[in-house]
Amino acid sequence: MHHFWLIRHALVHRDSLAFLYGTNDVPVCTETMRAQCDAYATLAARLPRPARVVCTPLSRTQLTADALVRGGYPAHERVIDPAFIEQDFGEWQGVPISQFENRGQEERHPFWPIHAAETPPGGESFSHLINRVGAGLAALRDTATGNHTIIVSHGGAIRAACAYAMELTPHQALCLQIDNISLTRLSWTAQGWRLLSVNEHASIPPCQSACAAPPAAPRQQEKTPNEGVLS
Image (cartoon, rainbow, N blue to C red; front, side):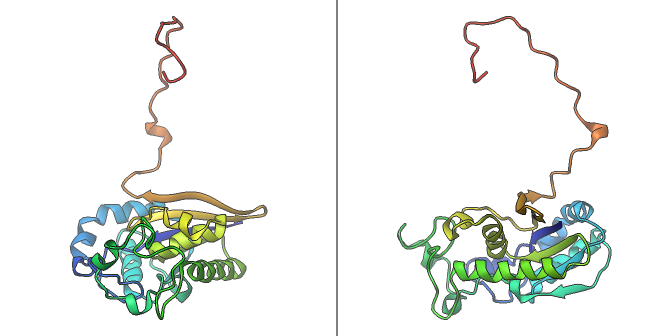
């Protein structure tokens, strides 16, 4: 069995949010990163130790890994793996998002700038992204020496990882919400792939048995005329 812990990178600078940046190496928003230091600390405490840590060649993933170390995760050597980089939008990278928002419903995915089946000029389709990320997951699985791999990646690539593991269509995968510094967990087992969680947020700490709520008092058995299956 091998466990994959996929983290989406930190929020990028607001000047980049208005454009389709894809594989462009845009800066992170340092103000937001400083404001979220507690969230990084909570996420760092949630992650397994020891684990192999993987980032993409883009600085926003590596800076996110740096923030996790500042939050308390042990310093580590990182594998830089381009298999988990964002979807390549080719000639459309740097184009204002507003140009895609004006497309009709048949011309774009409701939660992605372009259509799920579309291949940008000089870029790659989401199906290609699924195959690329899937090959990357398989390679990491087959070369693993421990039980855990942490991958700091991108929203599109994490959706593609879920699609590969669960055999989702591109359209279905793009319906998944993957927020910045959220956690998504996949496991490879003897029975195949298993999706454990999607878009976990570090601001919600795991349950602790010591602070669990007391059991609710039993309901009165008295029947009322309005009580039914939705009560």
